[in-house]
Amino acid sequence: MSTSGSSPIVTIMGCVIVAIRDDLDDREVLMLQDQLVEEVARVKARGVIIDIASLEIVDTFAGRMLGSMAQMAHMMNARTIVVGMRPAVAMTLVELGMTLDGVETALNADRAMSLILGRRIKPS
Amino acid sequence: MPSESASLSSILSSDFEKILASWLKAQAREGVKRTDLVSAKETEKQSRDFLIAFGRATRDAPTDDKFDFANPSWDPVREALEEITESRTQRGVSPTEMGWFIASIKLPLFEQMRVAFAENNARLLENVWNTTRVVDQLALHAVESLVQKREAIIERQRAEMTEVSAPVVKIWDRIVTVPLIGTLDSFRAQTVMENLLDAIVQWEAEIAIIDITGVSTVDTLVAQHLLKTAAAVKLMGAECVICGISPKIAQTIVNLGVDLPNVTTRIDLQSGLAYAFERLGVTTKG
Image (cartoon, rainbow over all chains, first blue to last red; front, side, top):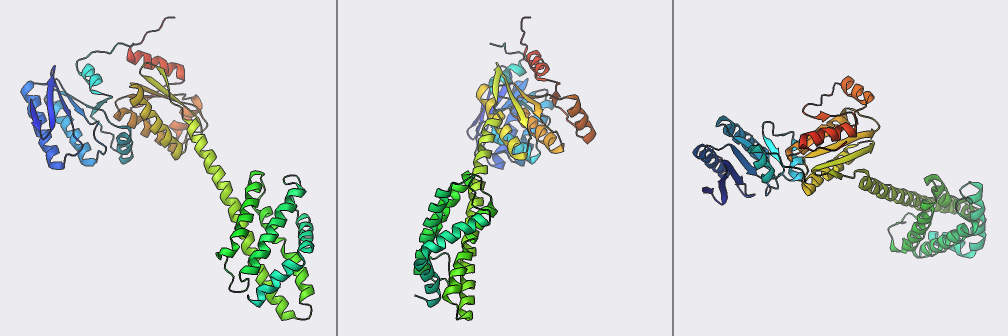
């Protein structure tokens, strides 16, 4: 387990999970990206889950960062899922024309875990 | 007290009843005394109140070229006007009728002035001009206030419409749906999107069904709104299904050259729900 600032990266059942803090600057974001790919390589992860629930703004830089992170993980045979996007953030991204193509999304980390582990959640 | 304004105010005070009666007659003649909308008694009371306030204001404030409607002495007149427009807006009086209602007071005033300044043409002309300015200002204010009140009503109704126009319902575990009815403008599309995304978070939905059966026309703009909503839904981690694509709408969309890529579409809500069940692995009996 490694940390970047105070964004902890944890690995559970082959899934690298990181919850992004809302006050990261561009340099810290790149650092986090670095550590994330290191961790993916180290544990030979099957998936990467990025929780952006605390982000109130996702600008073009952050959007591109998410895209490139997904691409890098994909090259290392890991599936990237972005979770917890706020409605307001989703609307802003759509208005900006950034639909984050190539990035998978899920409502929360729980759903993303099920997707990566290939389990369907049984309907209640 | 300026002498010019003294004449208007003195006429108003000395011949008050005569002017009021003549004004009411003038209102009837100009066809603005809407007896079907406002009762004669009420019209008389409103006219009387207005004329009293008008008389006081002309006594206290100048009505010649130093006339200024912003002068606090005119406040009671403004209040009387507000009261009249308020009651008339609710009854559907038109702006023209409202304007004429005030403007028709000119005739009785001019008649009295003709008597008062019979021997002095210059003063008569001056007084007529000054009175015209003042009355026109009042009439414009009345029309403006009427229009403003109407706009306030329209705005309120629009807000109410928007509130009821985009009900997002949870129809199954992890499935939410929003039936759209009527026309889809930018403002409504935004509301629909907001409500839908909030519902997805609230009910942890995986599938969002948009039913456009009730949407009267689908043009490029509406298609664009639908696409945006679908994209936002996908970013939230859910899947968007658009239902109610009738043959006519399908033709329109294709003829417009609009592409709906990566969006699942179904002919009606039933097949949309069936698709959602299949995606979620829900099985139903029968």
